[in-house]
Amino acid sequence: IEIVGAPIFNERNMLKGAVLVLYDITHLKKLELMRKDFVANVSHELKTPITSIKGFAETLLDGAMNDSETLKNFLTIINDESTRLQGLIEDLLTLSRLEKDEFKLVRSTLNMNDLVDEVLPIIRQSAEQKGISLTAEVGESISLQADKERVKQVVINLLTNAISYTSEDGEVKLTVTDTEDEVQIQVSDTGIGIDQEAIPRLFERFYRVDKARSRNTGGTGLGLAIVKHIVEVHEGKVSVDSEPNNGSTFRVYLPK
Ligand code: ADP
Image (cartoon, rainbow, N blue to C red; front, top):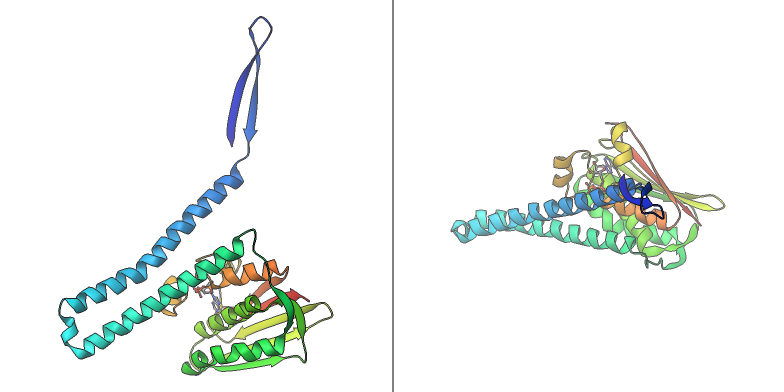
């Protein structure tokens, strides 16, 4: 609470009383804390790959380059870390665009069969690499008024997570159904699952259940924050059902 006070004097200039104004600045403080947290998180996330890129590049320049095996290993790491950096910057830009007040959805009639046909080839390779079976079931001619690129991103993020957090030979399934006024997109996996107490925090920026594991999977910690934003600007809802070691199901509901 912030307090601003002023004395009140009578006509003979004698102190008569005082006015105290109490401002509840909890919300402002919270925003400020969130902003500081965010900047600290972003800086940390940017620093990690850059430190690694620089370290490996310097070691190569110091002579490790002469060994062709080492050269290849280190260049692979440098390339992977650059890709991670690129992903992080793209995610940050997406979030910041979504948060701008002037952000406008480009709505058009979006056919979910077409969307799934576009998304699956993008995801298939990473599923195959892990030996995960990826299947999709889309109801006939389901369509809605929505921003195609954004909804595509929601489906990609959910499927990418499902594959990342599912071990070899697991299963990932995308199901699209509809009712009279909404479309339901469901992504379920047979993966590691999520603790009940972590579920409410999943959609926070940079929140990860297991930091080390998530970094290894190449995640940025922003995927679900982006999903939530996109769903909310479409006035939809997202929910999660999960149990540790027993897979997860993410559901997105979008009004038609
Ligand atoms: P990340 O880039 O770390 O995957 P996200 O915002 O996409 O970031 O997800 C936040 C966290 O939620 C992840 O780090 C992971 O701990 C958890 N998570 C997301 N999807 C799944 C899933 N399908 N199965 C298990 N855990 C998940």
